[in-house]
Length: 127
Image (cartoon, rainbow, N blue to C red):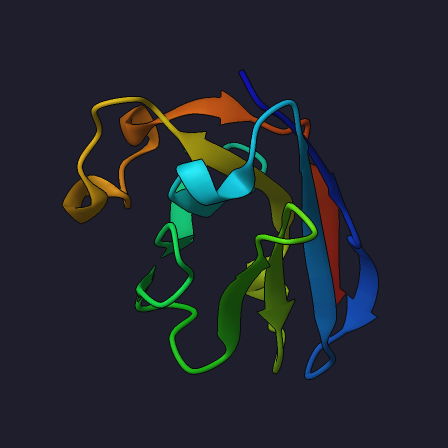
């Protein structure tokens, strides 16, 4: 099993930047593809970005493409999400997640592809 802890959320003005971190413990991060999801009040959890085992491959939601960058440092067992040009509609609780054994990388945009989730970190973007 792997335990995940997110950090780096906060309040930022529109147009600003934040970098989220997801620290993993219990197992090596390199054994999982990883994802970031977010959930706004009253909304369903939605896919933001995913990152392959080596960190080379990545998928992004259309809404964040060109603004967000997912990356990882397997030596530090940490996943990152660099968020630039933030918009008020990016306001949500952001969660990192580690793959469920047997899931396909091609399905990494689906919440059911993940077995392990962090507790979330709040990101609030003011207009």
